[in-house]
Picture (cartoon, rainbow, N blue to C red):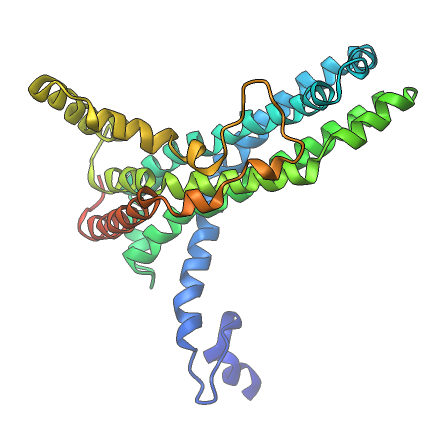
Length: 314
């Protein structure tokens, strides 16, 4: 009978020190861990949207395999570089079409992350839980920065593996084409480059996600308009008042600037033998704009936490 009572202080699997208390590290990390899991449970679009895009791509790819043997015979007549480009192209297209899904889902998730719980008044319940406002905001910020890139990466890899399996089955009777497929497709290296791209994009866009969370925590309605109109108004004011567009170019650079910094520009029409040779992590990590953006993102996350503390239900 004493076993249950002795185990009570460490219920739910909490590790105990020799004095019967929970270590500080466990107290700090477990609320964040369970808060992230709650976000994944409650927001199915995190994985449903990338899965929907991947399903459409696979459906179209299955239809295209009807003429695959003929296309493969035509590819074998090309030079080595063009043959490699033609074989890799469907897999690159799959990756580049699923990749923007992470950004689109992240934008709408951040806009609703804190506004939604105020709208349905569930914020009253969650504030009664022993989880700080900053921990809650960090868990919501971790979705676009960590969870979504991992989900998109796994879905893209599985999609490409299914495409490779379908191609292999379609070329069973075409040994030269099958040999070319397996020899000219560096799928593992392509996936490493994709993971690098997802991480670079998430880090570069961190201040945008922070701004969207601030808007989600602070406004009462029309979160998308509040997120877009203030930056747009600043750009229009600058153009009218000073006839310059520095702020507008800065916004464009923040949205798309990660790609030319994280990758080495390739000559038009060329395909590198090794996809990893196109990566430029040194240039990306040494860019001041990356670290400035991360500092701004940290400040915005703290601001979103403060807003959540003082903003009530809508």
